Image 1 (tube, each protein chain N blue to C red):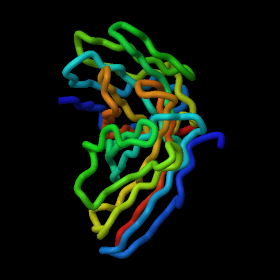
Image 2 (image 1 turned 90 degrees about the horizontal axis):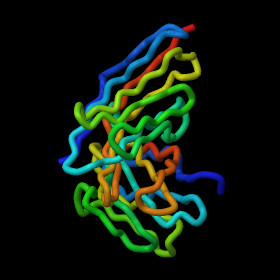
Image 3 (image 1 turned 45 degrees about the vertical axis):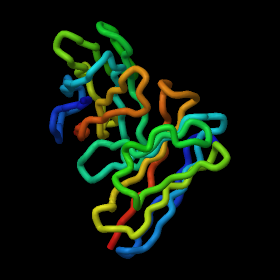
Amino acid sequence: GNSVTQMEGPVTLSEEAFLTINCTYTATGYPSLFWYVQYPGEGLQLLLKATKADDKGSNKGFEATYRKETTSFHLEKGSVQVSDSAVYFCALIEGGANNLFFGTGTRLTVIP
Amino acid sequence: GAGVSQTPSNKVTEKGKYVELRCDPISGHTALYWYRQSLGQGPEFLIYFQGTGAADDSGLPNDRFFAVRPEGSVSTLKIQRTERGDSAVYLCASSPARDTEAFFGQGTRLTVV
C-alpha cells in the first residue's frame, strides 16, 4: 500500500536558520511527490512537486529532491523567515490513482 | 470564483443530526475531491468526482457518508446520524483533470457535540 512518513514536529527555528523536514514514502509503483503548505487561517497550497526520480522541485527558496533509492523527498530551505511559519505536508499520488496520500504534517515556527 | 469555496466554514451539530457541507470548485475544473482532516493528522481521501459521477468513493468510512455533484460543479457532502468521531475539518479540492495540481478550499470545521 501507499504511505507517507514525515518528521514529527513541532519544529522551532530562529530566522535565517537552515530547515530540513524529512519525508519518506512507500508506494507500489512510481508516484509523484509533493509538499503542501498550510499557512495559519488558509487552505492547503501546493509548495512544490517532483514527478520522477532525481527531479528537484523548488519554490519560494524551498527545495526537495525525489530520491528513489532512499524513497525520500526531504524538504529544505537555506534560510527560513518568520513568514514560513506554517504546517508542511508531504504527499504522494500513484500514477493513474485518484487521490493524494498525505503525511501527518510538520508544524514549523520561525522566531525572529 | 477565484478559488475553491466551502460553506459553512464552521458547523456545530448535535450527535445524531444530519449535516450537509458544500463545495464550490474552481470554474471549469472537472475533478473534485473530498478529504477529511482530523486533529494532528494529514488529510485523508474520502471521494473523487470526475464530472457528475463519483469515480472513486473508496475513502468514505461508512454508509452514513454520501456525496453528490449533480451538475458537475457544486458538490455536497452529506453525513447522516452524525457521531462525535465525525468531528474534523472537511476539505474540498478541485483540479482541471485527474493527475493535475489540486487546489484546496479552506475547509469546513465540523464539530459534533
